[in-house]
Image (tube, protein in one colour):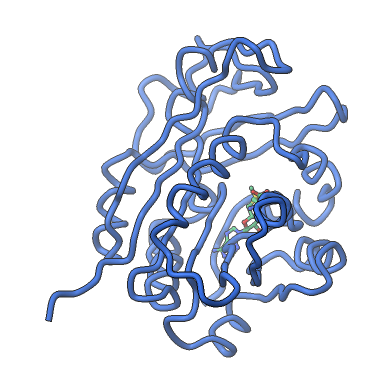
Length: 260
Ligand SMILES: C[S@@+](CC[C@H](N)C(=O)[O-])C[C@H]1O[C@@H](n2cnc3c(N)ncnc32)[C@H](O)[C@@H]1O
């Protein structure tokens, strides 16, 4: 069944606004630290062939662009498969990355049946999905990852919705963002990039940390670490709350190897 993800109308009409929010090389915190974590965790992956990377919810190819840029500079070859439910985003991504494959979830499952990918990534996607669809995404991950494959999942942190905290490039002043937040409630953010003068308003689900942890465990994924990137003093931006709390969280997981 087709996932019931939100924000689809906005992706279909404002995909260029979305793309402009994510510069490459990365300057914002999630991608800045994601590539450092990638270097560290890729040491766990045997590399006798190009890395096989699946990006679920690839959007207009933004996250793949950042990973490719980083891996090319490190001399690591990789083949990417991007998956998305939004046809506009899939078209934009395919035009940008002509040698990679961009597929709908149905096409992904027709083409790849089992245990293919060394790394599966998922940036800002679970928050757009119902609990049932999160279960489906995570079970696709465990089905298609290598037996000890890596999984890296990026989500906004709970701090970013707190209207008392002010962030660079994020407006969180919406009545939906209540204190305290309740599991599975709708939250809202306007994310803007002053450099490109672009912005995008997201409605998402908020899920409590324990909800994600249970979903990971139920899918057979072991959490290795959750990383919270912070803004530093010597960076391009005048970070605000980012100096003290992270607006994002990066979950690094591994598919559990079953004992025989
Ligand atoms: C916030 S964008 C992230 C795009 C990209 N990963 C990035 O970091 O820039 C979320 C993307 O996930 C896609 N998406 C949401 N739910 C999905 C699902 N269940 N399966 C596949 N794609 C999904 C949306 O269509 C959208 O393109």
